[in-house]
View 1 (tube, helix red, strand yellow):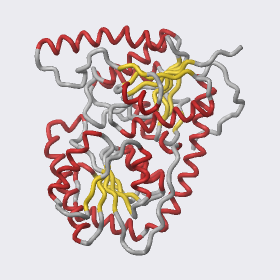
View 2 (tube, rainbow, N blue to C red):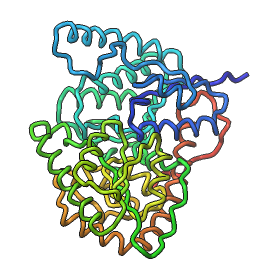
View 3 (cartoon, one colour):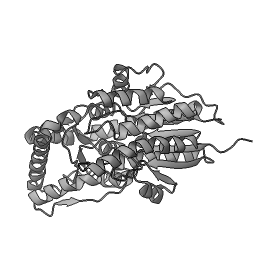
View 4 (cartoon, rainbow, N blue to C red):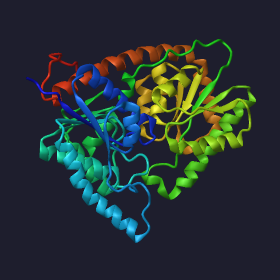
Length: 406
């Protein structure tokens, strides 16, 4: 008699990032549909939030509760160091209890935002090494990757990928990056981001008169290589965004501010303070579903965060991307909107407005393009889940052979 598979999910889940939680939601949907008998739990950043939101048991990722606070005092530094040692045993004990561990999407193999090697890269390495030693299959599913310059981070990410039993990427740039960092990717496939498998509301029908604009914001300070000019980057991004919003308001356009992470609230506050108008309002989304509902009601979207872009694209709403990493450019190109990208590090309000006006002129054609691309993405993700079942689950009742990803 076949026993129920024991499945773990792993990552910075339940920590306030809506995109990460959306990836988890997509994987849980797959498990409930294809492996309804699976016993599922999580090792994650916000266990209480994950249990409350998704109804699965969850364990805190780190033994030391102050892991993501800067340690300056001797006792804090010692506690953080001890935590790294304790986490070796905690992670391996958790991995041992599972047949399969899934890392659902997320940019776990990149450092496009500020990242320390002994933070999440170390945790991911412990997971993948424990999986290999204990014969628990670790699957990195539709993850993001980018070439990393910092040598310790690069080494941890490279070995994590090598030790995983299954790897797939959310764009070709991610696979190319891992190949460039010394990982054999010959058997690795590329599929759309997991969030494209989530249900989405239908976009509103344009009325012919200028309607609301959704603006997805981000507490953006550049990436790992931008630490020396982080404040300069942030100020330029914020100033350009405020000028863009002010122009729309002067034209009588309602603007709805959206976040993708709890830390983005400071940017919302700065914009509301700078543009004092009843036309500018802010939403408080708690899920990708909330974001999609907001975006479906808009004429157009301008957004920075990767999963905010996905939400707009998924609803079929024309979107202009403020891109901070190659993954955003790749996503927009894949969905047929490659012409509507703008650098987040160098926001030029005049150029942004020019692109925005062109986006609105082409909106009808772009909506049709998005309908076609979304249909293709859903088919590819169905193949992704079939491939995952065939590759890492102990037994399979699904003889379907997946098509090769496009």
